[in-house]
Amino acid sequence: MTKKTIAVLPGDGIGPEVTRAAIQVLESIGRLYDHEFVFREGLIGGSAIDEKGDPLPLETREISAESDGILLGAVGGPEWDHLPGDQRPEQGLLGIRKMLDLYANLRPVKAYEALIDASPLKTDIVAGVDFMIVRELTGGLYFGEPKKRETIDGEEQAIDTLAYKQSEIKRIAERAFEAARVREGKVLSVDKANVLESSRLWRETVTECAETYPDITLEHMLVDNAAMQLIAQPTAFDVIVTENTFGDILSDEASMLTGSLGLLPSASLGATGIGLYEPVHGSAPDIAGKNRANPLAAIASAAMMLKYGLQMEEEATRIENALEKVLEAGYRTADITESTQAVTTTEMTEAVVKALE
Ligand code: NAD
Ligand code: IPM
Ligand code: MN
Image 1: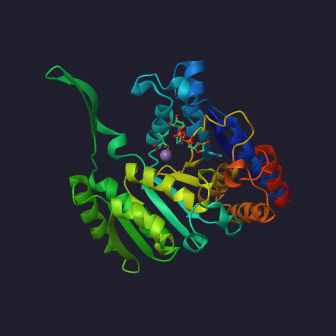
Image 2: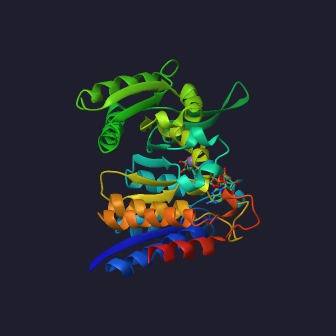
């Protein structure tokens, strides 16, 4: 029996609903493969602010640092939008990413065959979509200093800084090349090198890094064009590597190729070996507490934890197959069907568990 300790940080809004679904699926995997998963729950985001006055309490940091992997729901919501920037729920998420140096955010985008009709795009455009966004996660505008408000000539001014060190670019580029090695061998680096100095260093560094990977084809594209090409010919992509902000925006855009933001999982990896696994979507305040959220992104994130964090590839594949099976069987949450036949979060989760066993 393998024993693994998993930190569970449900967070806010639909976070707890979809995290519960992922845990149910992991428990089922535990039964099937005789693994013992020990779940240790911690507060993060708005709920942590309400209970502890801190979006990332010490106890949560400890639980996370002592775990074999972290499963996170989502943070944020209108209740906390009035707070100053450095005290918002999102700081909990940014804080834990920084604390564990989780610089590589893998966001696979794969269109399920059964859901080809769920995308607002034409089926011949989205059929066969299968790429991976490798988003830099601990640099760029999110963390650059200075980040502040000041008064200039009697007027309020706000500053965010977009900075990248060469070493930060190199290590994320290496992740992208490694990812491409087990895929189709193509990396597209997305930047804004026609305008931004940080992008020019990005492009130079990625190009230099490519010399070590002669088996991989590297191309570059400006981000505005990439946003368009993602819709025009999304099957042309294999691995997309890009900086923090561009990756954030492009991945939400890419979700619509699959039909819903509620389908995209992610893995955030660093050097410590402790990864964080969370859906790409947020806390969805508009549907929170209604048992309507699509749990598949969270469940697929748990599968990514098994694959990338716990060396349980077979178990991960079993989950992925179960997801395909329930979709083929016609199960649809409200985000991926217009019919009144939509199933609830709990019904979808039960269907996945049944398909597993
Ligand atoms: P969101 O991702 O929460 O929601 C965008 C839209 O997608 C909403 O209409 C929502 O109902 C829908 N949606 C998202 N996930 C879904 C799911 N699983 N099933 C069905 N529908 C789903 O983005 P937002 O509304 O811009 O942000 C809300 C809050 O979430 C903000 O406070 C934001 O900071 C936070 N946020 C957190 C994370 C995170 O924790 N990783 C990510 C994104 C946004
Ligand atoms: C995401 C989210 C976060 C981000 C926010 C909530 C800080 O949008 O994980 O995509 O921008 O990274
Ligand atoms: Mn985002």
